[in-house]
Image 1: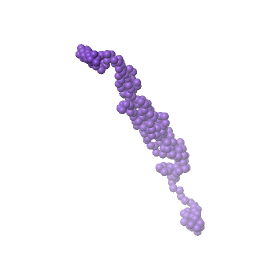
Image 2 (image 1 turned 90 degrees about the horizontal axis):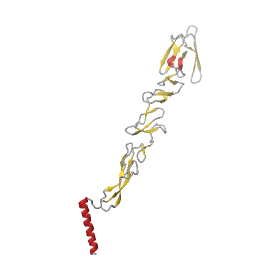
Image 3 (image 1 turned 120 degrees about the vertical axis):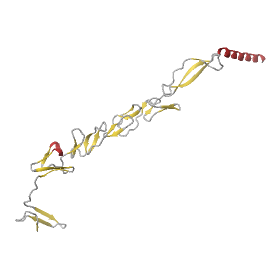
Image 4 (image 1 turned 90 degrees about the vertical axis):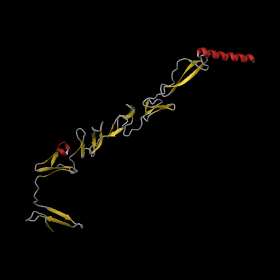
Amino acid sequence: MQLLVLHILVWFAHIEYVEMWTGCKAHSYPHCHGWGRCSKSCGGGRRGRICESCFIRHKKWFHEDCNQHCYNGGSFYSGSCHCSSWRSGDCCENCYHKYIAHCKSGYKECGGYPDNIRCTKCEDGYYGAGYGNGCKECSRISQCKRRRCTTYYNTECIECYDNRIFYKPNYDGSRCERMCASNNHYCWPGYCSNELTKGCSCAPNFKIIRQSGETSCQPSKLPSILTCGTVVIGPNMEKKQARSSINSTECQYFY
């Protein structure tokens, strides 16, 4: 027993001697190999290396966190990447095709600075307004039913209401033009060039009346009534007829 105690005392004395003259501390591992490869290239991984103690060359593994970074504006905390609503993946590397109002399916992409998502092809009547701005409505054109644009200022009408019946798009689609038609826009007696009321030309002795609700040809000089014949039907289906007299051209004699 005494011999064992003596050996222990000599051992600790030797350790203290080594620490004093070499600076080596017990339970320290200053002799290390290089760090191994991180288990993940991003999104938080682990790596390890082997170190040896300075006294008895005891080997021990040490580990640490590594590559705790995320892509595309993601934040690393609680052991993982936390991505924006349009990004997915361990490192926020994927573009998640979130819903964008009025964007056609399959036409979304991520990018820009700062990172965001955009629509590259919106439905008719809307245009892609860039990263983070979704689809914006095209400017409106009076009487236009279906339109398209790439910016707010270059809207093109591709179909008017009552298309090619009462209205049709002009040559560049910038407006819907009224056509000569039966809804008080006869342009008669006369003719319409290009089928449009703006091209209405009246027959001789007629003048054009062009208003928002009417395009017609009216006599340049009011006519004189020479004869007339008018029948008025009463509530009991009785009839009264007006005829011109010999001495008058006005319809004022009833019988």
